[in-house]
Image (cartoon, rainbow, N blue to C red; front, side, top):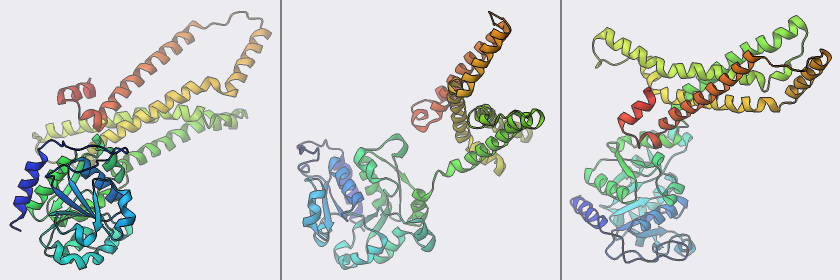
Length: 406
């Protein structure tokens, strides 16, 4: 693989040049690649391959797409990308993206001679069933089929939409793993040129872990969500017994109409308060544990460590419950039952021959309650917004700690 450092050096030098000498088609795609641009190959003509070609062309690369039916696929790619047969597409590029499914890898074996010594970038993802069924990753399987090539795993966590729309704060990182440092360096430079951030995940053996990333559904939210649901059920049951069931049993008053709105509105702030306390309680426990141990360099117990890692999700769920409480409170006067209560109160006042009904203490209590509630929700909103990764990354440590602590 003596040619690979030269490839990396060549790409590094050419990617520093400004992308000039191009014009755009009416659809916004590049009409021609810049002269002297590094050439990159793509095997496949699916949605991801088309988005990848669009991003590569827009980043200044000369793209050659290999397809089994180039005439049918040519119109789907940018006009600056050359669409040809697979055997022709892999002849000149040193870096080739393999954008086909695992079951079609064996069909590429006929290209073994043309692919010898090339860098193959595997962008595929297995399904959850395939991930459990196969003991080796897609990238490792591809490497076993092409022992004369260098396989690098990359771009599997980036969606086709993100490739076309451009990177955002939440999905800029591209995990990369491979056994050859020169090959990973060349792919990392391509990732930089495309506007993303490469993250070295180690050898190709780590590709199984990288391929499992897209299969996870909100892994950090499972425990906080179950905690919030458990608290909601407990507080809802308590408020139901106190406000609905007890009056029905003792006084035969039917107040089951309160279940959809009133009982939920009473439950939400209770959940929000407890969740917010659970955000700051582990920090106090961690500080007390460090003082007891006399050092901050010993590892926390697993339960406390996991608790500390879930504080951001717990805090956002607390803000979600508080925001719902505000919306429910705003809707309380719109209920039909509330209107009936006002009419009944007016009738009782007329029958009691009272012309003026004003309780100063209750008026002030409600005014203060609403004012403090609005201020509390605003403060919690600021806390939640600064906890978002896209906002937190734009703050320095002093600004972030000021909002979180003060």
